[in-house]
Length: 116
Image (cartoon, rainbow, N blue to C red):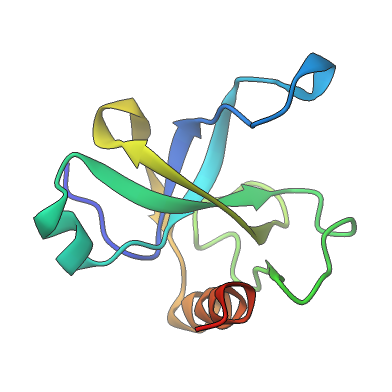
């Protein structure tokens, strides 16, 4: 399957923590890598974590999705600048796609977080 920037995907994400917080269950993430990246590295994507803990993550490098339903999410969600490179073979499939305005909001927090 071909993925694009802004696609919401399901991934078994392995957080870089130990202990009871290290839960490995399918989680939504949003692809932030570009078509150029995908053509040069077809084996993986770069994605940002999506969380349902919107009230907890309201920093300047978090973005509360406005159109979360149309992105295929079941509950209000936010995108965090927690990034991961994931092999396409480990992706659980596409859940939906961010709206154009939500993608612009995610791009804004990425630029802020990465100093771009």
